[in-house]
Length: 193
Picture (cartoon, rainbow, N blue to C red):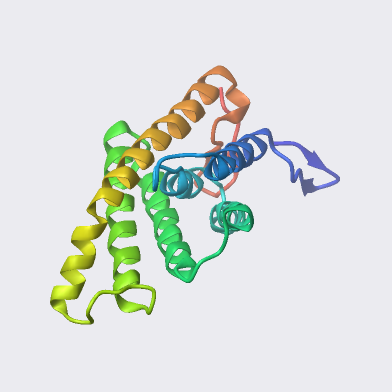
């Protein structure tokens, strides 16, 4: 870790690369793609798993989502989509704690897609944007109608999670300065060997 007159360097190669990956993935949202086959869920998982602070994990991906929506357009379900996005960031924190194995990434990706489906389809049913009756039958009909979108969400999240997490793992292997610093018992960073 570099210090200047006792203060910590604010720009670290790892942070720059992670932020760049998040912004690049966010930019893909505005490119033409099949409905719901987008990097949103994977982006949130990646941010939660890799940013060193919770503030950055929530802020950078969320701001990139907002920036994309400036081009795509805002809609009445945006608050629900963003809330679901933040749940996926928390799932990324789980990955950080449990380890970024293929099994854990697959489980978090599936959980992210499922919760997005449940939250956003519930919002369609519950708000005036939906045309479904406000009863159990209407809710079930809304979820059934959303199933094709769920499969695209799951496929997109799985594809982009593979790309994002795989690329970061390769970058960390190739460039040791990008590896997460080891933390000692007292909380200080230890040099990587």
